[in-house]
Image (cartoon, rainbow, N blue to C red; front, side):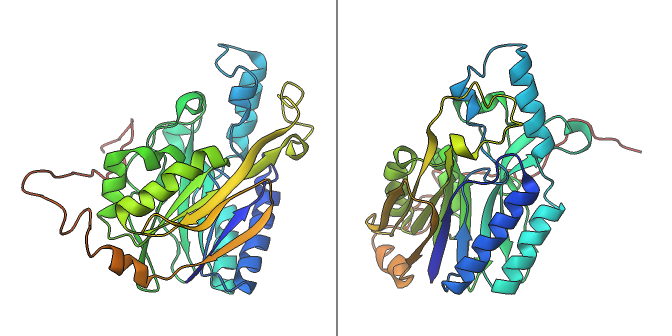
Length: 309
């Protein structure tokens, strides 16, 4: 099985143009013979990098409010035209897609956004999105807390594919839930940095005895539109430098982290290696003690306002 990572920048805060760039990558991946393509965290249409650049915690700051409002308006709905267009490209080119996107809240949560990801199957289309369980550090200034509704495995060619956002991959119980799906290929999506991907990619691969595919984005000052409220306040330079990589179920690199490079990256996976490495360790199988230690996962999606008529 060949997998691909789109290590590039979106058209920041432009969901329509970013969708077209994503479709171009789906086409490239199809031509390259890839069956699975992954994009970075909230790639569609951008990661809130400005928080660490501009003192995002300043309370009641007019520029921070303006930046958030722009981010909110650029967010997309899971059933919206952007993901539907990518799903159509997925079907046309027979490439499954893991897409990180900024999800706009609906109804009672119209003023909120989540760091979400979605698995798009070439035939079955868009699946239930997964919202990042805990935004990391300054991300909590922008993203709402997620839930376990989308914490599940996805079938592709008889394999189980899973995916998590960024530092969710460091959460021990979340990893256990992922292993419990029978995952053989796990996709970890990131804003973009070797410092983020280098350690945990190999760790997850070896602990889970699976392939771990990390997809990171790239973003520099040149990618910011003139209309972005905090453009002038952001330091010039590169904010995200990629770090996409792939580790095998023995914890060894199949593709070492790639930095400062934009474009499509591909890697061939020998899926028989998963079974070989589980001979001595299967974390939620023969190496588990469910009568002593068990994990309960609540996948219900809760609403703060529920109307009973």
